Length: 206
Image (cartoon, rainbow, N blue to C red; front, top):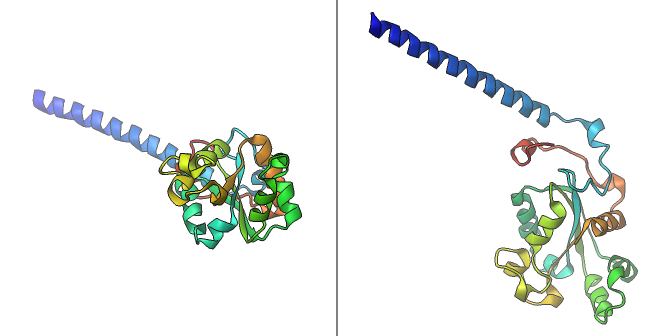
């Protein structure tokens, strides 16, 4: 009789635990579905240059002519996608000399400026806007130091190039530069506000 009572007690505890786990599971999937559901109206409120400090933070990344000619587009894109960032804008074009000067206007007083402009306008550039929490700072870390000889292994420049004059990629170095560069290269309608089904698995909140 005592054994039967004990078994009933254990069964009751197991059943209670299963009910609690089922409730938690249902709550998780309910939240997941809410997060995954597309809300075009809400997405449309994100400005073209993003919202710094949130999952909608955006940064400007450009694959320079040497990176394009070396066939590194897919490799570089995969670095950012594998990290978890979302591509919301992309185009390929050959910048004019005037446009290259606008892009690097903050470096116009440097002695290497003419050569930099000539190099940047020498061929096609893949311009991109990437979105995600910490996209600006983390994007710079993914890219690595400006001088490839000082870039850490595992970074794009540390792995894929050897000379500062051919360092294959550009990335915004701060909130202000990200905003300026995104607006310089992209019209609002050229940047997509969209939600991925996998976003809940990358960020806790969207």
